Length: 424
Image (cartoon, rainbow, N blue to C red):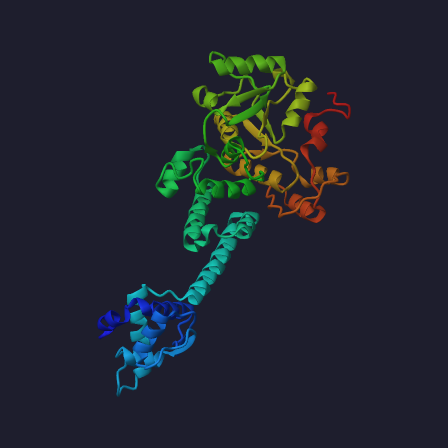
């Protein structure tokens, strides 16, 4: 702006600092033109400086009101004869103050813009969370607020978290964590423990797969495993009972065969399954999949764990992790018929749907009739939506109407062919 630099040289006297400080404060509070400012607590040197600027013969009072038009005129910032004098003078004065005090940020407008960004952020996140099936995750993040009040940076983090969850749900099972991070974010270490992004993703995945928020490294690995992501090959395990193996020449096959003969459950790691793939032994071509370890324990106690006593059991222990899916794929690839059961509650229905969609498994004992036979005695109610059950549409309708959970423990006798005293 013409004349600003020369005016700044005249205005930059130390005794006028209070005037420019107050003008900067007022201009940052609003875009409206400042017509006057009140200066308080001026000492004699400052009073003389303001009086000299305004062309007054006497000192101004320690507290005085300074007309801005007089300041503009004294510094030659006006432009006489133009119908744009007001605009020009305000712009010229603002330019002078910025030259003396640095850029002026309108705090009111900045707060208004930041609030609008917050509203847009939470509205966007609510829509994305509903699409991903994790509304509680979004509600918790909104209640926690924006870290450091940096809305733009927080949105970038949340967009990355949503992209990772999308990647987990769209990809097949058996992904290594660094591979997932690199594929979605371009950085194999972006989801490592201790990063800002990992807890955001884990919180969403925990809700999606019916798990509690992870509070330890072990629980975090469990969430990744439930989502089909391999944090490491030893923490992902699968519980089995009566699973004889054709390849008895391998260490895993020999161990499974011996435990099946003895009627004892076995815990197999993902590392073992990858090194020694499992093939079902003999003519037994049906494998039954259950959700809860207590069912396996009951079967073993009742003597149903021996290889000759019926179909082998594979337990998902909640949402099927990578080891579970790897074992079931190995069994299916060698001709095993997979039949699956889970709790009659929203997470259980999702487990069965997952196994049907990914492995071609058949629901077993998961019909409307089985649900209604246990719902009358069920005492636990559930919240949340019940997914459709294409294998028996009446099941979903009955569960939505009754809103009562029937757990595998409630029907274990029927599942295992036992009487009420746990005998075969």
